[in-house]
Length: 212
Image (cartoon, rainbow, N blue to C red; front, side):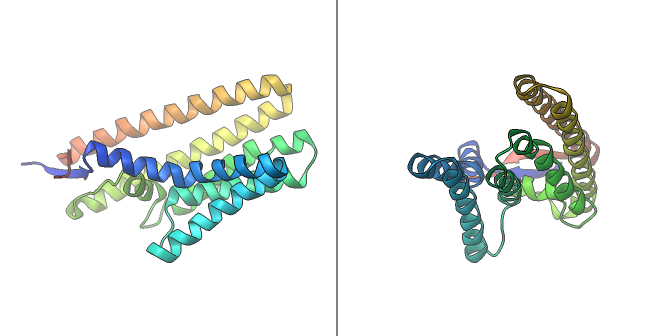
């Protein structure tokens, strides 16, 4: 029988994904909305960042580690918030779009050759993927290469958004940057999934849901 990679059962998988998204996006958005309604935009921005870093600190103290998705959100939101609060210039504020993607590029690239590439960490943390130890070295190579791919995607996205920001009007930039982001992220996700399936077939591995 072929060896398998393990995922939680669908309901538990949905809870795991929902909790990770709540930590990385839901909590800061809620803090932003509450503080902004009481003290204005800057107060909301600072509250959102503070909520995210407090969540990360609590995770570190309770579990000893901070999930990769939470780390990414904290870095990106901090860059955005520093620019938003420090600058009253709309063009400078919009620089956070390419800068945030450049930060993501660096974050992925710096872990791509390590024994714990970011894509592997995200697969374990966000969807609780469990892999057989016997094939970890083969899968490690895939996760390292996939991490390099996402570093390249975020670099391309940063360059694309930077070029659009320099050449487009604000309404055109907002529309074209959204389209560019969706297209590149969806393309990267599709390539990653197909590539992962190819690697699993080559290694004779299947995916199954864990027992209840």
